Length: 260
Image 1 (cartoon, rainbow, N blue to C red):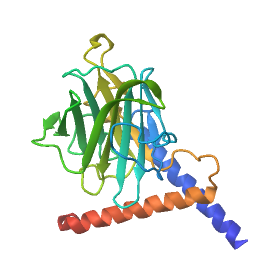
Image 2 (cartoon, rainbow, N blue to C red; image 1 turned 90 degrees about the vertical axis):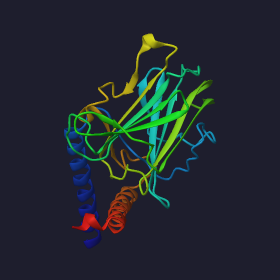
Image 3 (cartoon, helix red, strand yellow; image 1 turned 60 degrees about the horizontal axis):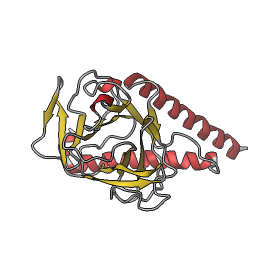
């Protein structure tokens, strides 16, 4: 009986936490644009599918009928956020092409880029430019911050058999400025200069300068995959909570001023 009561309590607690996260995300970011990061993936940042199963079970999001992206998390060693973006109809190398990833490194409702807002533009498939919010607009950083790895290539993939641009990138949450645990804001965009009439494709299709209109990474569990038990989900959520506490503790140890 005690075990049954304890199990019911754990399930109720988990549901409550997920409900709170959902409410907070809806308040802070664009409604209807949210995904949860799965763990257990082995990702090689090389700008292509290293094998046919590398990204298969990731939570894919449609940017438009011609573009998709996905994101997962690794909690083995350093906590690392991985993203892949595929632009199925772009196979030209134009100097004005760009990828753009915007991340709001906090769960707060702000309508202009703040110090918690970061924007990463990969221009001409060759150059990463990093920006940080200043409360009103964006400030170009003198150099990209550490802990960010990216590669883009012209490749085919299981998502589309024609050669097209694929971007893979990662944010090491121990060394990059992207340190917060979900829910956090995210906006993914791209532009093909050879087709200017198509304009910028973005998820969500909202302004780059308004974090409250971006989508969100809602948490580490967005669904219960087939074959998962409720106890497995409880354990995953517990692991995420322990990881978040450990990351915060390491951050405070590395920055004693945070303890004041």
